[in-house]
Length: 527
Image (cartoon, rainbow, N blue to C red; front, side):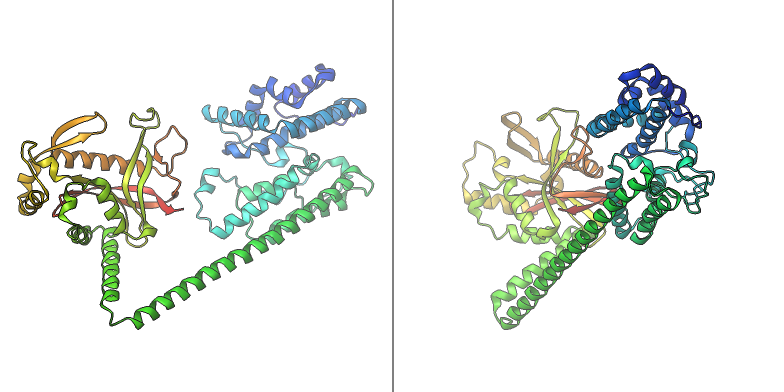
């Protein structure tokens, strides 16, 4: 049993008492469960800097180190070996339980407005008499870090380094390199102290700008280990083992990253080459057929569609309405009796670039409602802004001419076409007051309303859809937001969502209304 003195910390007495009184029943998880309140107090006393839930390992490793160090100091060698083996096994096999435990502790601290964080090595574990010069002078709040405008390159760098660091931390003896022990360095002063814990903090605070800087710090750990420890000591041997693991993982990651980079470049180059070849081929075909009227008409139509899309995402719907009416007028009068919203949906989709339209965008309107009772909704067409300033949401309504004719009147294709021509020139105010009869799927019966009611109901529906879209992807099944695998939302600077309701009556009269634009803090990308 060691008699080495140790610096006390909050929870020290509880840990010592537990190890002595529990005798042969000690367990790391058991100690944590019995001393939740003390652990919370310990975390609260150390700093006011916030700690994210996914960083529970940083806190866990400190208490795991305390547990093994105190057990080694208090117990006989044979008893310590038993406790150590049990703790190592428990720590590796019960990771999920430990994660849940520490995340609950963190949440408890947040509720009390006492936010936990890991303190510097100098105050939480025994290091050397010299402070760690590489630790940041000022603690950076995680909420501030999350707001930093990190480049994609920086994010990839941090992810790469974290992967390597976690590989090292997963080794059961890695806690030995989270601090320095005075007796192991024989009272020598460490000129450049560094540890896994310090490196973790530097990653968290975004202090690395290159892989070389990260590798230099990792190598410094092993350099210090060999410089300040006896070659026959356990820590020296563990350092050699851990360095061997680092070298293997480091080389594997570098080789994999290089292979992935080259593969991605090859794919991009191939895509660019294919696009270029395709475009050259199209130009060649057009050049060969410049006098062909059919080719001219196809190009003409494509340019009209492209121009209408550009105007739409700039907030001007008139060119799109014109091209929609032109398309509708090409349909046969025989189809007036069967025309419906599905037909209108298909036509509108065909008049928008495939890359930038999301038909029937799936939304969770109210996650607290059961399915079939207003939980889900579907925006008819959501349009991405390949160019322009706005994302566009379209709500489509079709008024069948059959629903405008008295059921007592006999009609055919000719009568429907005549009514269509009359409605084309009818005053909008008069048109809105017209009675409209339709079959309700919801109530399974014939219902009567006015075109004005259809318009106002559609506007309300569209506003509700836009509010839901502005919330981004749903966080979970009980929230509201976008719930569609075809689209991914990313937090960004404010963007505008504009909405238009389009009501087509027959084939010749089109009503449309804008709704008030909504600001969204997301960008929307097609997956």
